[in-house]
Length: 214
Length: 214
Image (cartoon, rainbow over all chains, first blue to last red; front, top):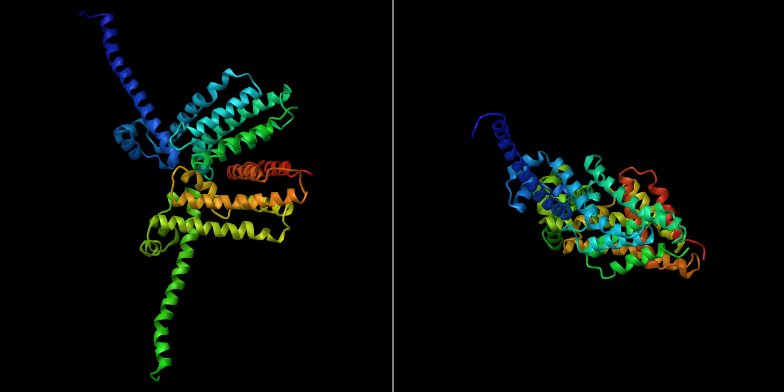
């Protein structure tokens, strides 16, 4: 092979390719670790997350995981972001085909209840499991969890507002109703965990009670 | 001192007296330990309870605490019972002076909100903190926590039923309404933890919306 500009490019591209592979391997490891992390955090809370536990569960080396995330807090924050993305993909995205208003609102509730019943995370809702653990502790973990909670409630609120504005349902306060229905979804998550057969019909009775004809 | 029946009583009573003192000391230590235990469990969950942590927090010896409670599970169950007694004394008992129906119901809600706002336990509501941790794990801890939850909801339900029967409020399903209001109290506990100024007025707006004139 000749020496010259092309060779120089090739020479540069070889290490670059290795770096790409390393990045790819890093991204894949990150994905694997975080998939285990969100399950652990949904079962035992973000406090239960440790490099050691993750190494045991995933079969990856503790040192490798530590290199990837540096600190426990960075790992916990990454787990929250990962859980939020999984939630958005599994619960919110599939409802986008429904028109705004009652149809989208009911689809969101159905989607959330399906998410609580056949858990996306091993321990049921990630936020139900972690908000109570973190809510007495100001800091980035609590902020990240509450940001996700607020975003979810704004989504419910928007559809309720649309339903009221379009005359689909009788007047309700969208913010207060979203708060109440969200509270009932949380209670339903617990009821499902303990095997309460009445959990689902009860949740729908509450939801329907807010969606009355105008 | 003569020998005889009296002496025999005295002879028996001396060790008995020592035992009483020991029992008393044991009961006092138990009380001290459990007071720390419920605070720890309200902040970090029942999982966060350990003989070591309790020894550090209370200044008592780890061996002494271990002798008293034997196992971690026995300690956790004792903490739940202790929290339930504290809750009954602080939240339910003071409402007994109110007549059954709307008055008692509102007193119970006010009492619960005061309990969440100026926490009886360091981390806010003991059950809000622990039910999500335990609800995926069948066993005596979960059973004890759910027994307390059910008892509280039955208390709310009873007063709502009375209010409906006596024509104090418009017809509601007492069980479903108790479930909804309890769900809102839980959500309010979290809102109070994160310093949401709207938490209290919002909770009362929801409660009032169920207590309408017949």
